Length: 294
Image (cartoon, rainbow, N blue to C red; front, side, top):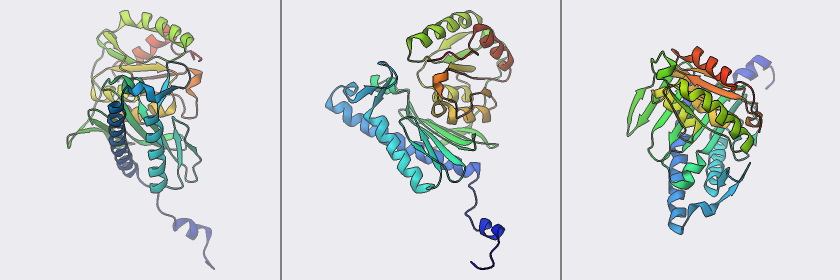
């Protein structure tokens, strides 16, 4: 338009959504995708062994199923409808450049091995970041429909059966009373190193839990089901949503930049504030702060 200044043109753009608005979108996305995942699993199970519909990724024990792919395609399409100029990064290969500075980070099924074996502990995870900083996220346990969400500066909440309550990390102050969640990689060399780290940690904490979903581990930390979490070599789609949920629930969270590949084996850790420093020190002594490689 003649006479319109650069500032005028810029101000006609649609305003950026708030973190709270982004959180609402994340919740809607994980909810509808979880319904799709559950429905497709029932259909495939009715045909026989669902493991017949999987293939390997990084190793023979790192599976991906047709449902992972279908769910990520659904997320890609829905985000492209809602926010067509935003970027999308997904576990199963989605990689769309952002024209707005906002990028959606999606994991269609976090806990695929549990999904294959019928263990009721796998999730859909969606986070959204601006220039590398996560602003909002949501994670849903597909089987139980427990939905965790957070927005920067807004706190974290859990919703199930229409009831919502705010989340908060535990007040534990002693490592020897800390219940710690962790996970393991798929390569034999990394697993060997992770086993050595576990051997150092186990006598120093209350106990360890390995449940099979990094996103849900971080949500469990946020609601006080565990006191700490660590893992080497997870990717941004594994932790983006869970990390902001844990952080907004009061946990101390340290994760690699979103741009860093999980193949480097860097450490992600999160803990209740009363043990965060001691837990970080224990992991350092155990050698977990050194990248483990593939």
